[in-house]
Length: 213
Image 1 (tube, rainbow, N blue to C red):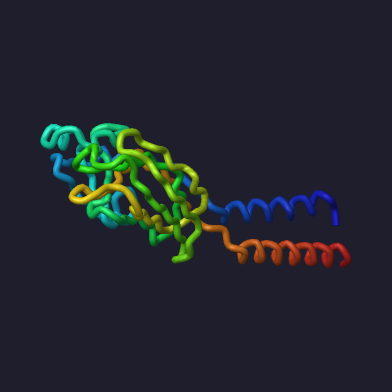
Image 2: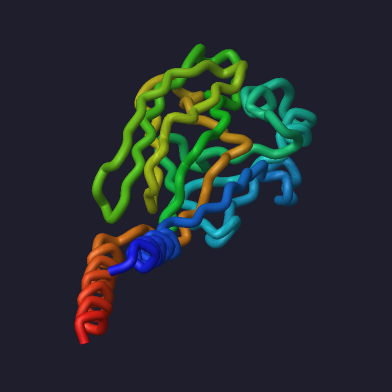
């Protein structure tokens, strides 16, 4: 078989493999496209293509005007809104239809009573098909946002659990801003590579038989 034909076959295989591989597009959620009067607005499912559990949006400027200095105002990276866990303790972001990469987020410990605590301990877990893929424990304060940006795998669910911090009647919670993520359009499957390899072998055999005729 001529070298040119061999190269053509291999090039076709590589092109086919990449055509079925993952395609991603970066997104940043600032939550500032939500309208809130300073009392908190529940994030509806489907916002930015994701499913949100126990998350609300808060206009921190209006909230501060109504309630005075508080941790929510300190959590604001891009005014005027942040997202926070509605019931302190746990929250969740899902993408059941496909996968996404949870790239980074600005996180701050918050409380309605600003000096009620000095830090919050948070466990962040990322899952794919209910399998734990990545996990991180974070401890951060209530005055300066901290960037979390260590997750790299494609997942379909991210859970947030507050494990320490705060005190009654001011339990610790957390706020997030400028969440960066990437949708993964398709996950490469080994079967695609197997089919490609079988196709190349069939093509090589066909060309060899044709040459021998």
